[in-house]
Image 1 (cartoon, rainbow, N blue to C red):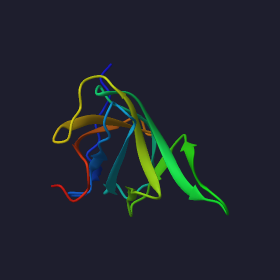
Image 2 (image 1 turned 120 degrees about the vertical axis):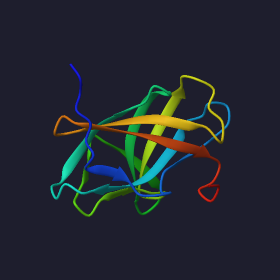
Image 3 (image 1 turned 30 degrees about the horizontal axis):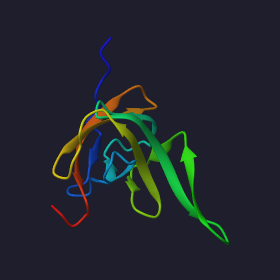
Length: 130
C-alpha cells in the first residue's frame, strides 16, 4: 500500500541542516516547517534510509543542568514548527552509509493523519555553511 505524501507541510528555505560529527557520532537535525493546511498536524515518527534511528528531543534547562527529553510527537500548527538548537532537534543515530559534510540525508516524516513528507537535509559542520 502506498502512503500518501502531503504537500501541506514544507521546509522553510535554508532552515534545514544536520550538524555533522565525526566517527559516526549521533548528529542533530534542525529545520523549520510551514503548514499551509490551516489545521494542526502531528509528526508521530521520523525515519531515514541514511540513519538507523531518528528520535525527536526537546532541550530543557532545570535549575542545575540542561537535559533532553524524548518526545513521541510534535505538532505543526498553521503557524509552523521549528527544530532549532537549544529547543527541539532530531537525533540521527547510526548512519547506514558514510555521511560527511556536503552530503544530503534523506528524511521521512510520518504524520498523524496518515500522510508523509520527505526532505533532503544538507549535512554540514555549521549552519552558516550554505
